[in-house]
Image 1 (tube, rainbow, N blue to C red):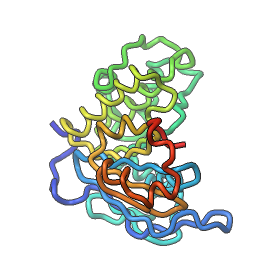
Image 2: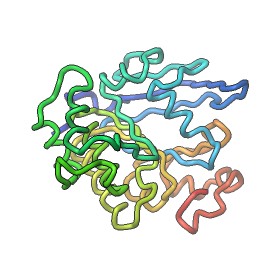
Image 3: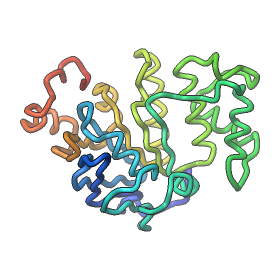
Image 4: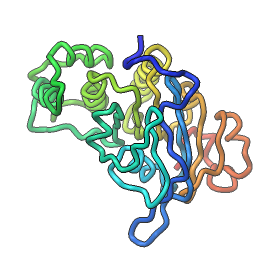
Length: 252
């Protein structure tokens, strides 16, 4: 069962077209375009400074582009701010799982349930927790959670509202291999069984190898290659740009 209503599986759920972004007098993004369909995982890789995080800032609505369009379910949402996109179902996670340290797990769920209308019930929170495999007490201080459970808590708060799209920024950062396996399983569940569209920035190639349907490579604010992981690993443009440590399973 999908997390949201049925749609046209052949048409992009989410897309951006010809995105240009300038910050501080510098050109950050240069004509970036992408799309993702329901149930698809699009991986985004590139060296530090490639523009990956800036692209996510534009896609999520935190930053407005200089030009270009962002489309969701065929509608132009380019000028909608982050909170408006979140209400439409554009969910985002961050590389650092920052939780409200002054709250307990239960209080964090309550704050998320009541963040905006329609308000959700504790049963929705239980659904989100069960979905991500978060098994901690409601009275557990979030400050005491390890990295994986912090990520699970934040994901549960997003998923209890059943977003059709997730923008995931390095969900495997700071995790050991067994914990990465859990993230792998969760992303497979969301995309293949629940038809969530996922765009994921990730340096761990071994994770993308198992979950990504397509991979897009960025360098200096541009897309330099895209396709299957096998294809981009063989692309001489990628190697010429930075792909020297691929044998070690990571992009630095």
